[in-house]
Length: 199
Image (cartoon, rainbow, N blue to C red; front, side, top):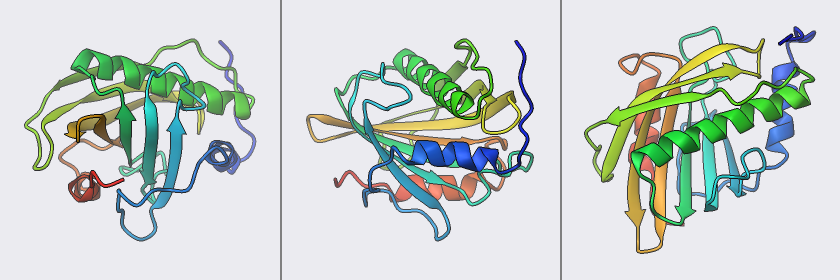
């Protein structure tokens, strides 16, 4: 595979703006600090249409998200408010693989970087559920960064899940390059604590 280097530092922002054009107005069920970018997307997701859910994805991006070489690079959260409800750990791993393969390949096409064959690998293990959530997992997402130079990318992830009534499930994802003990995780967990089942 040949990866063409990008010619402009602003290309990552342009590629992300192309994805943002698909966004719908952000819902109010997920608060974030001032300065965090807020977006919301409907399921099926345009970049991962095979994910078999209905509902919305809310995304909150750290101001340092695009500073990929820094500790807080690629720090963001996503909340899936979806139907149908069943999502076992293995299904979550598969869903995250489909999500990141679709995301990175879609950005690569927009940036005229050669798209890669699906290659994201996700490993989750049980985690004590935080207050307000019934299940939780932690692990790693091994993928690549189409927003920058197509370099390998390993994200640490925390996942929390709960039912909202009888027909909805919320799944909260926190992602960061930084180890889960590092400072960038504090606001990610604070956003999770503020998340509401209200729609």
